[in-house]
Image (cartoon, rainbow, N blue to C red):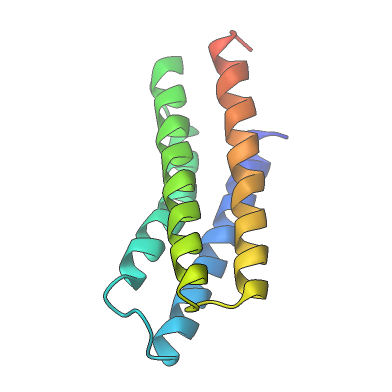
Length: 117
């Protein structure tokens, strides 16, 4: 998968995170921690997008590694929101699956970049 496809995937994920956070706000649940999910979930795509304009290979890898860390944080918040019944099983499953796909692609891209590909 090319980096441009990863940009599109992560952008769509960010939009879905934003929409989910809006739904959570309407439910009047977890208002104090919604921003955590919103920040980490949207930061993934921002860092992937920024990597396309990296000044060096090391900078590119660093941006992807930051995006990967944000994926792991987003997974954490999704689990917390799910376990506390703030989001439904269906909402969790869909978002977690998409985040996992992005995470796997990031890991593969970082590995390739480190190997000189």
